[in-house]
Amino acid sequence: MTSALDIQFSSKTNEFALELYKQIISSENKNVIISPFSISTCLSLAAFGAAGHTANEMFSVLKYTDGELKAAVAQIYGKVLKDFSANPTVKIANKVYVMNRYSVKA
Image (cartoon, rainbow, N blue to C red):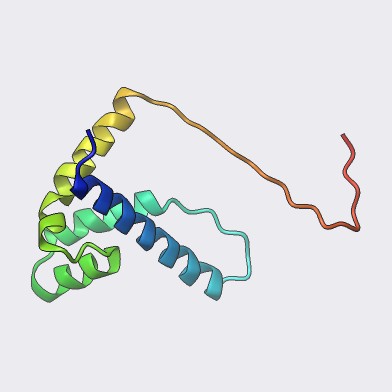
């Protein structure tokens, strides 16, 4: 069952991912492949090891500013990672965009 905190965690993690992508593509003129989930997981671990202003800044970047959500983040990550390892499924979707002036051969 999905709780309100799970939904809030998912929403805030997506906000972090979108902001991260925006920052990266605004400073790079290249194709970029990153895993925002991996980055947010590592940054969360570091934030829990930090204290005071540093921890607050890290949680702010991650969008985990709600006190109740901050308290639940470690537990939610534990649940998510447990689910990943229990049901390993990879779904991949690809899409190619081709300019109209080019033809595609099958």
